[in-house]
Length: 414
Image (cartoon, rainbow, N blue to C red; front, side, top):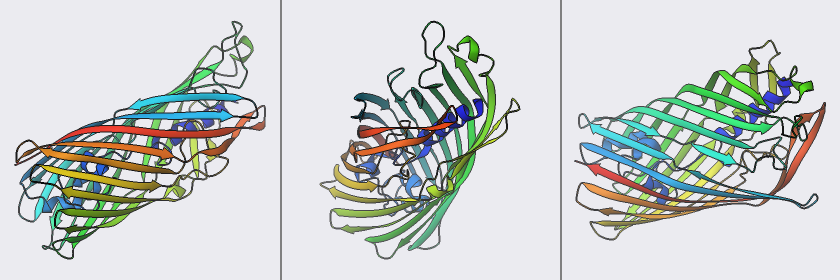
């Protein structure tokens, strides 16, 4: 029983920690977010280090810095008309970033990127109808990316570097749909994993066919998060269950799949147009293997994600030397297949509408503002893999999610 319990809990951890169409946060720069999160072929400021490190060598100034944060509000409504169940959750996130680049020579640049693409939370009502799957989950993850870029000519460059990830997750859910202790309190478990870490890398290429037309390619490797000696703690157990559910630790390798982004940008007078296509290889997440430290046999759990694509469009208009206006749109496919849709990640295919501007206070200092609205397609889906008393129990209904964000950043170069 404990093996099945922790298996589902760790599946929830994985799903909520990583996945676009799940809960990945595409907000790694205010300027590029305002342009639909395009950027693989855009040369603007230090944000290019995330979108395509090859672009660093084309930045005009020797030193470039960009930092910012975003206030994100996610609303999800749940309804099951058959049982007359309704619930909703509102969650707030604050993804942030810092980028700094330095031009060492005319052909070599170096920099450091720090960002939080997976800092998120989901908090349903305590003991709600789906509490056997999740009550709440809170994830924190920081990415550190030292980067170099080399310019081979005025028309071609490449760049990249290692990525180090460090994070933590806390997850709580009820043990079953009905188990309570002698005081009527629902039995539950909290999964806590700290100092979860991993290494990966990123590499990019940039081709400038003309002064106005660029093409870019960026690859991010698969990253395997290694959770070691995480804690599983049980609460409100009835007397008969205290010998079955015992506090334990676990190890698990959690894959974050590779992704490839290709795109182009075209500049015409005061206008800049950008298009990015992103392919994420979620198929790498076909199963989660968990090793327990209390002698329980290892568990192999199917997740059956599919590869998915994101299509992004961005537009920038330079109104004057001090003001640039931006707008964008993107469509993000969900990797979750039917029967695997869980309330830990109440996200389906989404469409995002973005906008923003940069106002230059001085020639060197600019204020970057972005606004975004994400509408997730309504879906009637279920999670069919919760095991109770040896039987698979399905939980589902209609989910409707929307996200609004407002971001503020500063860019400085000299």
